[in-house]
Structures are given as C-alpha cells and as structure tokens.
Image 1 (cartoon, rainbow, N blue to C red):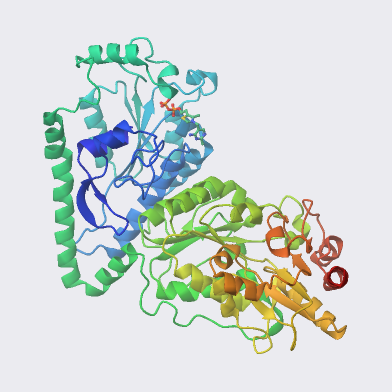
Image 2: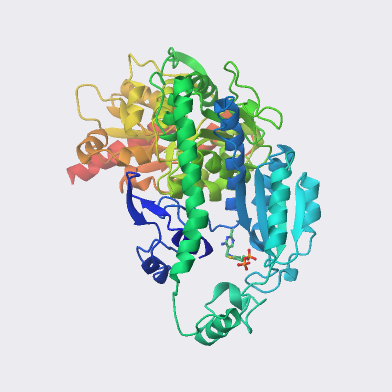
Length: 620
Ligand SMILES: Cc1ncc(C[n+]2csc(CCOP(=O)(O)OP(=O)(O)O)c2C)c(N)n1
C-alpha cells in the first residue's frame, strides 16, 4: 500500500502494453479504493507489468532483496561496459525496503553474503525493524543480532532508532552514499500500526484492517479529520509533484539528453544499449552457430550447449551469466575474448560466480533481467527445486531469464537418488509461461538456443544431459529445426500410416530411434516423435498437432526418464508410458537403463503390445 500510495501521490504516469504513455496516472484514487479487487491496479501484492512504476513483483518474502542484488550487479556491469568519460550512463543507487520476514528467509542471507563479497557499494537495504510478524513478536522465533550478521557479511551497518527521525534517516542515507567499498544495511526501529492506540506494536496491525473505530483514533492521533476517507488534500499532491515528481522528471530528461550526446559520440555502443533495453538482438546474432556432424557416440547435451552458448555470446555482448558453483559441470563458462570474471574488482566480467546459492542466483537473474541484460544461470536439474520460487517469479514477471539445468535424469548414474531428478520436469512444465526445452541431440541443442535467443517475455528452462547422446544423422532423420515447433516427426513409417507412435524427449529419443529400427526389422511401422517442448507444441495449430500425433493412431509408447505426470495427454487412454516411479538408484548408467526399462528392447516389446491391442480394438 505504501508503494501504491507513493505512485499515486507522485502522479506517476501509466504506460500501456505497448509502452506508450497516454498521460493516465498509474494508480488512481479509484484503484486505491479497489485495493485487492479484480482489475484494480492495486492487487494484493505489487505486480510488475501490471502497475506502471512497480519495478518488480514482490510478495514472497526475501525475493525483492535478492533481486535488488541482481539490479546492483547489472548496474555495475552496465557501467563498466557502457560508461565512457563524460557519459556516466549507469551509476545509480539501488534501494530495497525489507521487514523482519525478509531477514528471516534464507534467500536474503544468500544474497547478502554475495553482495558483501562483491562489495556492491551502491546497494542499500532499509530494514523496517518493527519486531512484529504474523504470529506475534519476532522473539517467538528470531533473536539473532542481524547487525552483527551483516557486519560479518562485509556490509556497512547503520542504525536509526526512530523511524520518525527524518534527520537521522537522512544522515544514514548520506553515510550510505559516501560509502564506496561495501553495501549498506540501515536498521530502522519502527512501530507497526504507529498511532493506532490499541493495535500499535501488535501483530493485529499486520494482517487485518484496523477497523473503523481504531482508524478514527489513529486519525485523531495524526490530527486528521476523522470522518473523511481517502482524503488527499491538493497541497499534498502538489508537494509530491514538486518534490519527487519533478525531481524524477528532471533526472529522466537529463539522462535522455546524456544519452543523445552518447549516441553522437559512440553510435555503436548506443545501438547496443538501445537493443539491449528493448530486448532486441544484434543483426548477426546467429552468426557462426555450430552444427554437428552425425556421430553414433555423439556428445553430451551440456557439452553441445557450452559450444552454442559461447558462439551466441560472441554475437550478443550483453549475454552474461554463470552457475551456482557448477560452471565446469554445466559447461556454462564464457571463454570468448574479454569475457572475464565478474568480481569486486572487475565490473565488466561476463562470467558470474553465484556460489552455492541457487535460490539467490535465480532471484539475481531476475534483477539482471529487469535491468535488461540477458542473463543465464546454471545448475543441476535436481536443484531447480532450490531455485523454484524465483523461477516462478521470472515467469510471473514475464522475464526472458535463461535457466540451464544439466544432469537431467537418472543418467547421472552413480550419484544416485539424491541427485536423480524425477519430479522436476513435471514441476517446471507446470509453471505457467515457462518454456521447458529438453533437446534430444547436439543439433536440437543448437535449435533450442535459437528459440531461447529470440524470447522477449518468457523464461526458459533448458534441460540437458550429463552423458553423451548420439548425434542423429539428419539426412536420414528429419531436420532438428523441428524443435522450434515443440514436437516433430523425427522418423516415420515408410509409405504408410504408422501403426504405433514412440514419443520421447531428450536422451530417450535415441532409445526410441533404436527401438524404431528394431521394429522396422520386425515389419512394424513405427513413428518417432521428438518432443523437446510441450509448451511450444501446444502453441501450434490443431492441424499441425494432429499431423504429428494422428488422433486415429491410439497405439503409443511414451518414454521419459522422469515422473509420468502429464504424459497421458500425449500417450492417450490406450497408450503406455515408460517413466520413473521411484527416486532412482545409484549404479552405472547402463545398469539403471536396464533396471528402469529405458532400453530399446523394452520399448519394442511395449510397442508390439500396443499394436496388438489396437488391432484387437479395431477388429471388435
Ligand atoms: C516466503 C513467504 N513466506 C510467508 C509469507 C506470508 N507472510 C506475509 S507477511 C508475513 C510476516 C512478515 O512480517 P514482517 O516482515 O515483519 O512484516 P510487517 O509485520 O512489518 O508488516 C508472512 C509470514 C510470505 N509472504 N512469503
């Protein structure tokens, strides 16, 4: 509500979905009156892309803090890349307001630890230390010395003992501005429900309306007319507009003028910046992307991805990222000229080191994306669970964040059940707006990166194998560009309608190809459908979808080394599925494939059963 009220008072103007400004206020008084009601610009928690002036969607405690670290990293990176003498385009401070809840959540600790390490001096967190959460006073569950913790993280810790002491607040902010070697935490002691005589300093002031009587008493305390609602005196609007509104306007005008001069001096950089900010790609963004020769031994999805990522990074200078301490395993290091490592000393580095902090990493990616660089972050698929709340926010905010998840199945072998993802694919596919891509071979990986590069508003989970996959001979099989449609016919029945469909994604596609070849030898006409992305497939028209999965072919075998949840949509009522129903086991890959049925012979047997069953149904 504080944010909405400020947007209203400063008369921030709205943009429409095309980013045009039509002079309408972002938040009207009517929106404020309709707080939390359908279609109000004041939903229960502020939503990016819905209310102009809201810089990110917040609500899950701690996400905003970690995202602000991404914004501060972006600020430093963009400054190092784009600033030139006399043209300090990026040199702003990043502020985040937080409460006790944010301080308790683990993600804020991960993010603060990294921010301290990186000495992000332009980052300031203001901690509303009112010592009240939903269940009651914080000492029910929270008694550590937050200041000491942050000092240990390498932050400057300042204290303001009274939230109403504007002088002390101003001094704290000035100290922050003068500090150039570490981020700043300002711990501000405050009173929740300040001025409400019966509810101040109680959890009742947090989650429920004060009630008419208490509101009147609070208004009395403030010397405000007690019977008026939503009263905004004209002088208040004027005061805000003269202060915050005009200051913001003037700063923007000055920045635009600076950018005009920059454009004249550095047209190439200005063009890059413009494209980056508009989520456009450089003209030759797909130059020199590799293509891979057929090879039965093949290579791992992660290895192919590393090669494509590097080719792409040479063409797209604002593609930056890293991993949660798994760069060597996920093959996500950028080795192109000048890529370097981002650090306290090197703001221009394109390789970010997030440390073993998947959750903060993902929120930081959101902060980078909100700042318009194109970020990627990598880890093992199993640990996508550690990142999930921030992935969800990438999708909710419609940010084209790139998640690279390797070691995508029981294929991790000896690491065993703790590292074998089973339910993660289904859970990623369940996130609205997130595109999940699980390519089947090296050339599908190339196509996957083409899809990724061209996203404007959707996050992607690129799911890759640790183990080598055969590189299919595309003179024998359909081109890998079929990936763009989410699913495509890779190998088909010869001169007839297929008797059975074999559906798979990723590493199981080559299992199906081997089964297909065996079935051919046995006189059974099969079709292999590679299904790297359900989401992209669902966007195709019905005619295409039916051409890939003909409704009258009920004999179907789906094969995926993951939980089968959702596959019934494609294998249908009659079809069957080879999937995972346990957490896997620790053993060499070949033994696991046999044990869990991911062997061509097993697929062949099931396919034959399917054909027989469908013949019986037909003859009835
Ligand atoms: C990750 C997460 N867990 C739980 C909640 C539910 N929740 C909303 S506010 C809140 C208490 C927050 O207390 P505090 O940060 O002190 O806010 P204040 O009481 O000062 O408003 C909780 C538990 C949430 N929004 N996000």
